Length: 121
Image (cartoon, rainbow, N blue to C red; front, side, top):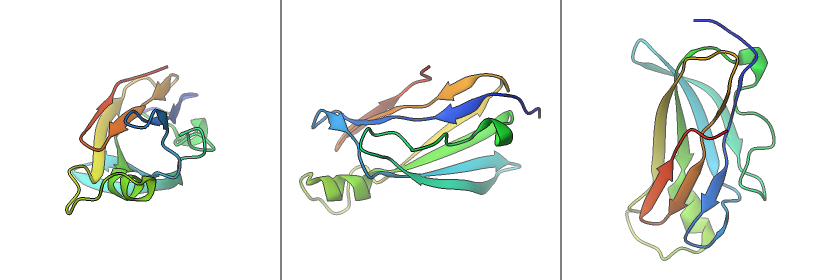
């Protein structure tokens, strides 16, 4: 494990409504030896981004991480047609950071019945 100058960000877009996903809760975990260690809780702003880096350079190290997007609560608050239980509730995205000096951007495109992600820039 090495630390560097990289950092982690996200951007959440509601593709069903064509708007940034404002007010979505996000939790970040580091996965080590099968254990989830909670690092941070953030909420998306008006632009669907967090106000700061999810994992800033001072804490950025290689390893396995998981972002958990609380989509169900967001969809309930956004006025999406209700359903119990929601088809999408919590969306975990597990990913590896192998370059300690890179910007890792993990965006989420969401609708009530599907989502996609990729490594952005």
